[in-house]
Image (cartoon, rainbow, N blue to C red; front, top):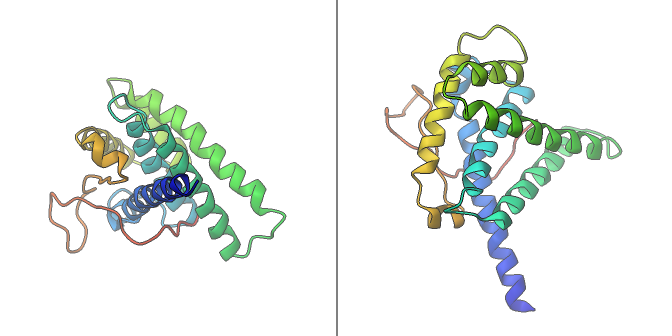
Length: 196
């Protein structure tokens, strides 16, 4: 029994580390300055969702195949959404509905991004990024974000499966930002505090 509890605790730790890396990457200033993403609750949610989906897709690939970590990471995201909404004063009766909507949004975007990334051209991915990340507004930066997303997929693919199963994930540098070198990677930062 106690061995099982220890394994469960370790699984949660890995999920927190992985989700922390997702949140840290979504906070990178370049997304809001160079890529034109709105620095708002909605914009931050969209970037968390994008990076979470890319990480979960990698965890589901054959060489990693860690469904338990995928589930724990999603649960960590849901807990974060619940905490964030309560912190900004969303009423107790409304929180479950909004959390459910946020989780459903990740699932829907996962289907969209997975399909678009499977296409050899960027048009479908750009269209989905405009729909979700840019809320249907004209966004010439969407093409650059699509290029970044493909770089992130390649970067994640190069991470050793054992590291991923241990919750260790990094993302490519999104571009110019204060104090960053051109090839620096972002790893897990402080605990998740997203505001969807």
